Amino acid sequence: MHCMAASVESPTALWLRGLLDVCLLAALKSGPLYGYQMTRHLADSGLDVVAEGSIYPALARMERAELVTSFREPSAEGPPRKYYQLTEAGEALLSHRRQQWTTFSSAVTQVLGQGEDR
Amino acid sequence: MTDIVSTCRSTWKRLGVPPQARADLEFELRTNLDSAAADGVDAATFVGGDPSGLARDWAVARGLTRSRWLVAGSVLIALSVGWASLEIFRLLFFGRGNTLAPDMNLGFGWWSFLVVVVQFGWLLVPVLGAVSVYLRVGHDRLVARTVGAVGAVSPVALWLSASMSFALDGLGGIPAETLRISLIFALLLGAIRAAIVVADRRSGHLSAT
Image 1: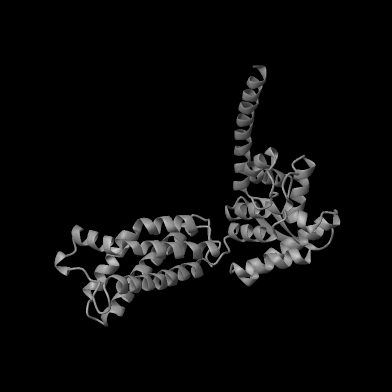
Image 2: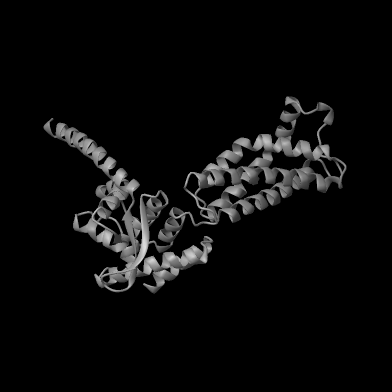
């Protein structure tokens, strides 16, 4: 991803690459957000290892896949902004990915725990 | 911030993003940069240090790159490089005035196929190389798949174009013969390239431009 620093990426940045789309879907679960709001949402949850601009290609892919839709509306601050919101397909995919993540993260935790015991 | 937006805008122009889409992308970028600036985040940090790369990835993700021009460009380059290569080959190995055409008594069977491919197979290298470079310069996301598919089909395309051209042997002389081979070959490559673009478009990864 172009937005990462030219130097070696941190492990968390690498992991977030594969999870960015689903994290953005989860951020939208609370309601429509514009791009920068989503990055703040991720950062406030501890996921601030990617440049804010990297979410735009991800949002574009998800919009073409009809997982999110966009619209323009005046923001709370005043100027109009482009907001994104989940579609039904996006909600369904988010639910599915949550289940997959629960299974996957449990397995990884178990493996890492086994390595520590030895 | 002005420099960042300006770099993105010029990248979108270079990639052939339509004006309305450019305006939409710029609007979204500007409004979010404004919000980031209000929080003390500078524009360079916001885009991650590579505004041109962001602009390219964003335009490609939205399917806004100019696939039609890249198809037409591929055909033109294949024709130009193919014709130039064939003329050089003819002059070097056959001398002026000698025909390239193999013995048509061979018919159109496997033997004639092998003869034509062996005789002209070297043409694939400069043509595929030139088309690959063109698609890479155009930041085309389908370049690897295009060159791979075109390369796989090229022996058959080469045989078809040479056979069709030799069947018209005598019309226009030697330069016309090499031009016909190159033109038919380039059109076949263009058709393959366009088919890949259409298939990718239908799968939802590339919009019409």
